[in-house]
Amino acid sequence: AQSVAQPEDQVNVAEGNPLTVKCTYSVSGNPYLFWYVQYPNRGLQFLLKYITGDNLVKGSYGFEAEFNKSQTSFHLKKPSALVSDSALYFCAVRDGGSGAGSYQLTFGKGTKLSVIP
Amino acid sequence: DSGVTQTPKHLITATGQRVTLRCSPRSGDLSVYWYQQSLDQGLQFLIQYYNGEERAKGNILERFSAQQFPDLHSELNLSSLELGDSALYFCASSVAGPYGYTFGSGTRLTVV
Image (cartoon, rainbow over all chains, first blue to last red; front, side, top):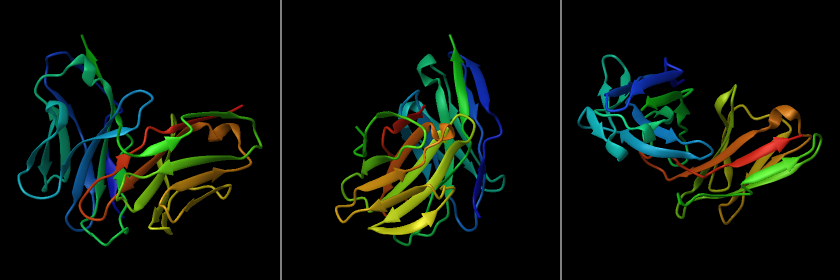
């Protein structure tokens, strides 16, 4: 069974500082990894994904994530945090199977990011 | 607008009642997923449909049921509602292949 761990319930960072939101995963086979963001009273929005290729993936709003196969991690990063980045962030994983309709994403519990002005 | 439409946006109902939540997936997406999000339980997978057929079940209560219709829209039926069923209910859709989900904006259910 696949699983995702987000070890921090909350991350606080000062505006302008770099931020990291941590994620580790467990999956059989090659992983497909995703980050989503949720603003208050909104649905989850896709940020970025890793399927294959470069270990550093760039996504929306200046976010990027680093895939590390040996550490089974997929940490979300941003060089300079904005107050508007404050939200709930979810990491998700699925296995590499591509059978139509046969996969589900497994989500972490979420990390609340607070960027302090 | 994500392309996934959920109605209604808000729903207030009494304990013991039954409600139906509706989801229209993004055009071309055959899979529909339902999730429940509450403060203490996080994002819980309920059920998945693919092209009209149930494909996977998660932590869905027996009082809850769902279906996907020929036009691919889906409905989640919640019956004998309890206070603890108050939550945000999300629908998501996807296509086959190495893609993620597209989420709707959710239905906020309040049971009083």
